[in-house]
Image (tube, rainbow, N blue to C red):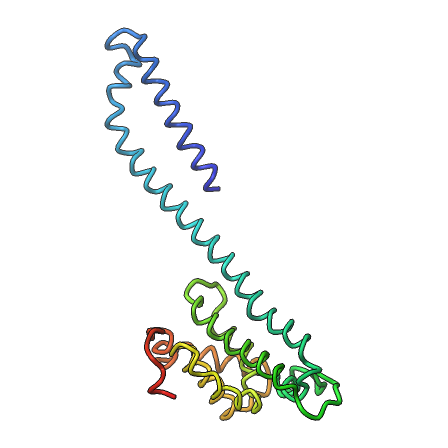
Length: 230
């Protein structure tokens, strides 16, 4: 739609240029000459119209960039973690099976591996990917169409894992203060609450993202040192 408007503006501009040029071949005070002499008045309208078109094009480009950023973030967060789990679930079955609520898996396990102990590298790799995903979302959240409550609802079930929580102290110094505090909150919530279904889970995070606590976390400066909080 905006492209059509842009073409219309260009077409009108070209028509006006043509009329101005053509007026040089007509007698003075002819209708065309009088019309051309009044163009400066009309030009003010076109300046305003041009500003409007520029604004609409900016909005369109911004909305397009939001969509692209959202798709990219979904691929790098929601979908990426499933790829990671698929690759490592049988190398760290205890960690993999500690994710998700029972009602999400209908009582089934993510991994059926008979390994008694998890591979340390796989645990480190999966854990750090989850921590980094929270950091990625925090950095991009203001430019996405995915709400924070949807993100927190989805990843909340990962942070119910006691194994994942044991890994957090090893790596938390590597993260900005917003990621640090939000990850702590995810662990805290899952220790305090037992969500029975998706509606209960989503309602909790819908309310939380409206709280002063969450808004204060998101507005923090990530360059702030977290050492004093560790």
